[in-house]
Length: 431
Image 1 (tube, helix red, strand yellow):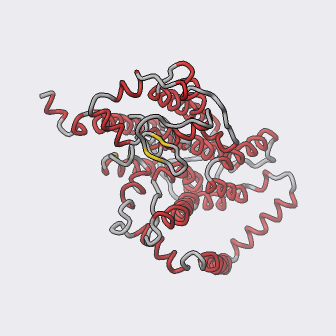
Image 2: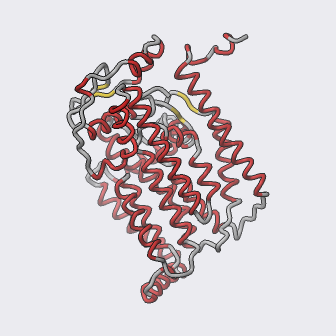
Image 3: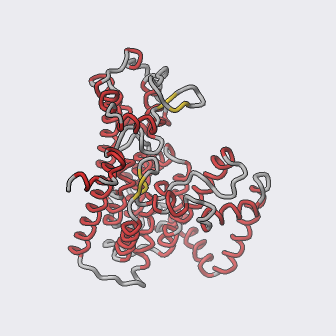
């Protein structure tokens, strides 16, 4: 994929170089930033490819001395760019061209992603097939092989999920290693996106046998038993308090009913929200580059069908997931969708399009990593839904589907990004 074409990659390139050299500026044509900085624009890049000048300008042309200085300005928030920073810094030292800086930054990001996924697959107690499938979805691979900090975000979510798979079936006190792992997981979630912190709520639904204090564990069990025995009253009360809280919070932000209308239009009105069936839904599996092309709808449908099959075939070998944890995990994906779309409305839509009656800016790739949290729910539901599939057949189906997905992604990328006329007539040149 050409440099700068994945979503916001030029912006990430700018941030990475500003960490390496706080006075760094883009040399050449590009998209302007409000703070005066610039990054390469996708229109200019595609024009260079069409004119056959891309290689010369990005790989052969060496950077001026002003672009090769090092004056590190690293902060804790920049840790999400650490692999890319290392790659870009090495490229500046040994291969001083924009093309090589993009290449090495992407390479180190992809290697970090691969190692992180291998770690999660090794230590997860259950859900390995689903995690493998989600990790190799084309949209995830695109982000992993770009300069995006999505790699750090994905690995933070997968790492926390891996830890939860161990704790959710454990019926003994948590170990010191697991406590250290949990602390590191919390830090990883903290330095990524704010909505990831909400995943820590799942800790309250884990088995109380993990706690060293039996009194606290007993109290938690009593609370959940109280809720279980009085479901109707509890849910009515919680719903009422949530409505009152939302009304008070939204009163100064356009009003409660205005917010409900915006959310309804965002999730149900594809004729109003033109991105609903594209960037938001299909984007969970594969909407690529700067939203230029995507996997065909029939492939995306099959991928969702396979995901459902993998979930129903899931089992926890070390024990059954408790009801409260299974149900809570099943709520993660829809709640994260709601939170992200709500956040995009208040932080983006209300700024760029204050009169819009739907949320703008949400992309399916924001939701994709949270698919793995359907696994504990599926494991709990396995006591009611029995799906028996031979492991060998399931593994083959998983491997073949992932391979076809990635091969199709590669072919589409070559056609759209590198061929004349976006490869629409490439067969006519061969026959």
